[in-house]
Length: 115
Image (cartoon, rainbow, N blue to C red; front, side, top):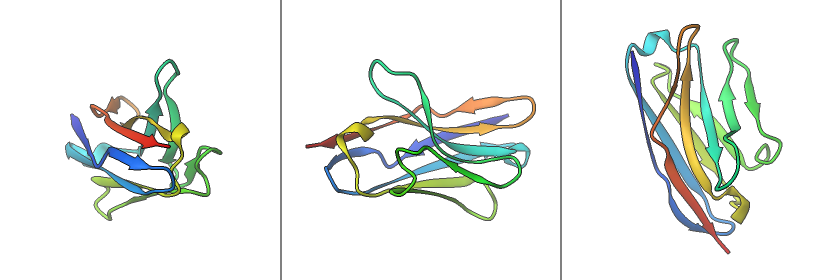
């Protein structure tokens, strides 16, 4: 199938930036939609940003003006540029890949924003 590996998380101060990367391997040509989600302690996993099946980009309202999702032409790498980070952005960030028959998650990468 498809395997996902995230990288790029870490500790950053308020107002700083981080860039997350997701590397997909396996049958990457079957990926129809891809994106980033996050889960903070005690909260449900939520959408951060994604490329939809029809090529649109969706952003959470919380990050719309600060984060940017991008991908390579081969659509086997996608990225999340995070700017102007806030303490409430602290979470485990997961990359996600979907097709009509699977919904796959990476292992997650911790992002911690210190005040």
